[in-house]
Image (cartoon, rainbow, N blue to C red; front, side):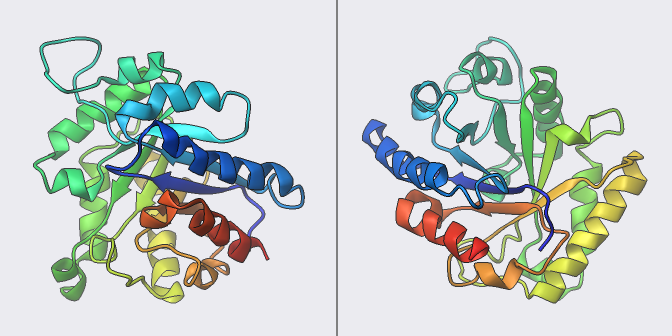
Amino acid sequence: MANSTKYFIGNWKMFGIPSSFKIIERIQSYFSADKRNNSKYKIIIAPPFNLLQDFSKRLKKRGILISAQNCFHKDNFGAYTGNISPFMIKKMGINYTIIGHSENRALGENEKNLEEKVYNALKNKLNIIFCIGENMREKKNNKTMIVLKSQISKVLKKKYNFKKILIAYEPIWSIGSGKVPSDKELKKILIFLKKFVKRKFRVRYNPKIIYGGSVDKKNINNFKSINELDGFLIGGASKSSKNFIDILREFYK
């Protein structure tokens, strides 16, 4: 297992009310007590918009970071009912946002929207968790690498600072299914993606790439030996402090 800092990012999706902060408090207590390992990983939780500012204020200088789950593609203010711009997210004290999650792509989010989101998020000094991934049909047709290259190439730009971008490889066929790629399969994809990003965008350092899709305490050990893996985007298991802590315990035991 490589010595670089690992990211453990919890995406709560449409879950959470103000009292749900107790979940983060339990995770925070574990993190603070884990003196042996807590310098090796970074925890980021992405609650829904209604909780962002409150949770961010309560976690100030406590080690756990808060991320938005999405942002609108237009910036600043405007006549866009129900949407929140990167500027507004930053002004809430948030420094991360997820962009391009497959659940939003399925609702009609396209590459033009994503391109604008990334540009405006970076303009507002937000760090980006940029999601990519193939569906089962594309996987069966051996189109995984082609799809991933296309998703990256159509949105990211050479001028961007890739130290501000975490690429989250989250195969659509794995999300919520309990199925995960084998360690050999995932390693191959990660090596390909790192080489592609470095070559395509002339990045001189290894870009950060994390994995998401049915991550839990039962399969986390499958990923320990993959040095190219920089962390995890965790869905359902992140809504339980016990399950999230169990993932950390298993990975670092």
